[in-house]
Length: 238
Ligand code: SAH
Image (cartoon, rainbow, N blue to C red; front, side, top):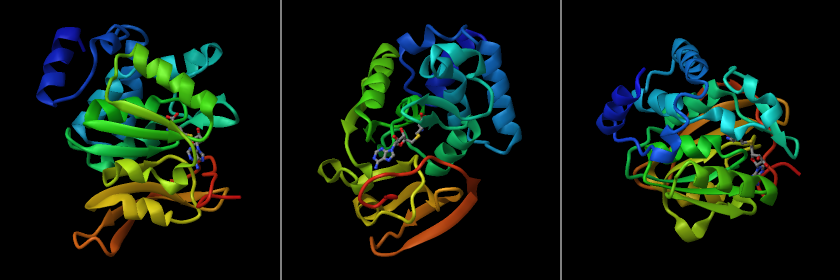
């Protein structure tokens, strides 16, 4: 794919990819295209999601010593015993969030900030919360370097959500939770979607929660088995 072609597609799909991000387009371009081909083969079809993943430089989000591994379909360590999630799982979560360009999204577990950048290129505004200040600061620096200006970073217990900016069109939970934290369901708009791995500490089921239009009940769909790091905090694991 050539840069002129890319710029046309960004316009067509209404993606928010800053010029600063496009500067990295040639770095690991082929590896990134292969990663996205693999994700597509595994069943993700949403063209906006696939394009965002072709353009966000994942290698910038992983420690320098393991940059060569950035485009393998695996999770990788990012410090503080946390991981950057597997690209396929990030794509699947994002596709199931059914994001529109004006959405306000709450992300629990900023981690490296890679998924934050994908979300920021698809939606209107991202509110992201991370329990480790060090990870949040690192992610904030990278997103700034990549030119994103539609993300607000917070440090704290995301299992309680962030009521001051609610309600949210979408909520993305990137850490394993024993159940749906009640405040998150409350902060989701009626008709809104939450994607969350639910289970025990060893394995979970990636679940899609659709809050009913009347704001009371919800529908739960199971997407696939997965393994995330633990959600800490009040509604997470002790
Ligand atoms: N999607 C991220 C990976 C997230 S890993 C990426 O692309 O890099 C899960 C993250 O959730 C970890 O950084 C962990 O520290 C964080 N986390 C765990 N419990 C949390 C909580 N209660 N509130 C906010 N963040 C939490």
